[in-house]
Length: 156
View 1 (tube, rainbow, N blue to C red):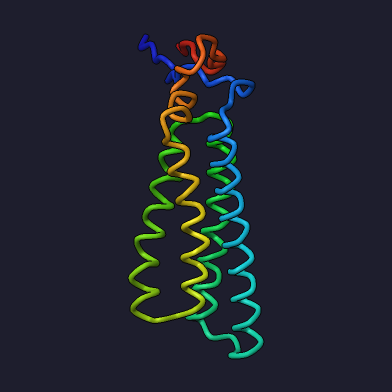
View 2: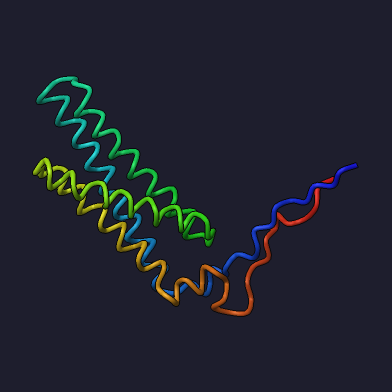
């Protein structure tokens, strides 16, 4: 019989020892996500009332809403100390800012400039999450006691 070992994730950092940098990173991610959702809803409502039900402007509003929801969900998972979500959220914030910057300059759009400002708030949260003290907490090196992972074990 083949024995398959369960994937171990390693220990999780202790929430009691969470540095203030991690708390502020979470706050900035949540603020950014909430602002993006509000901006997306405002865009959808404005475009549907003023322009009608055109696909292009409504699709941009829905994409902004989905982006805000992704920030909120990934931020919540990251705050619990799951390292892989921190890197995913950081990459997402970096890509969004890198994409919105030339679009904002190219189209000279005020709406895209507001979306860029909201995304930069999330990028600031990602930068705080990789500061040395926060990085040590995420990598479980800040204190000697980390919570053991409950999913480790073997499956036959």
